Image 1: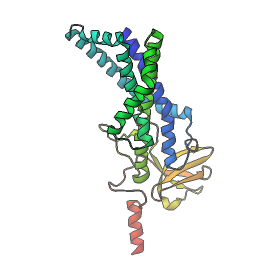
Image 2 (image 1 turned 135 degrees about the horizontal axis):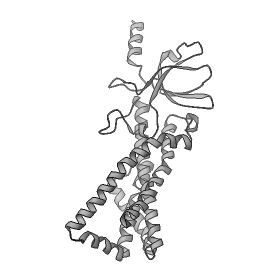
Image 3 (image 1 turned 90 degrees about the vertical axis):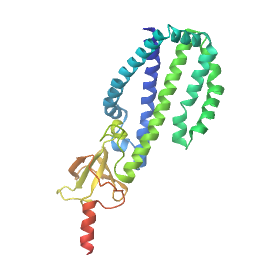
Image 4 (image 1 turned 45 degrees about the vertical axis):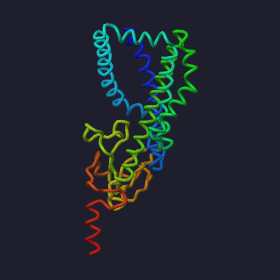
Length: 286
């Protein structure tokens, strides 16, 4: 029970830190299309609603994983005749060892931040993590190890930094996926999850529609556009063929031929006419 309580004291701040930075990722996605999340009708409440399913899915994955790790720890401890428990006790009895491990791990969590801010290789990140850990976290963590409250606080800090670091890594992947949508109209699915990409799990809706006027006549040559969202009576669309973002009043604008995650040609890229429209243009030119 004590082990589960310690694990929970780390897992909870990881989840809080991860969610706290997700909104920055949403901002980065919509900034790529030239609008703000608010112009797409996304605020904290909407974001939480869209992420609820994802958070539940992560919880369903985390619970059995956590249970498996606890069971593995118990089995290894029995196989080593309590050796694993003695090893854990050794770390607890030698605060400099525990503080060093926590400090190095905390320094490594900045990998995500540096990945977003610049291209950092693994070779360059190792000395950065060691330097940050030793210079900024080692002594404070050692001092926090003196009392139970301090040890609990250290776990809280390490968990929060871990969640924030994972969040920045997630932002990096989200921006790369959004760049694929901007350039190719779609992003690659996640491994083992055919038809689902990272943007689907963070609430980005891959919904396309043909814009029509009040008389139900197609606009913009009947091109299908990505619906980014709606706010204050104004739609936001991404015209993949022209690679421009369009904002148009919802009043007098009808949506037709609505499709979720449409099938695009294999080698299709934004900035080129769709297959059917390209054939029409070729026939017209002839």
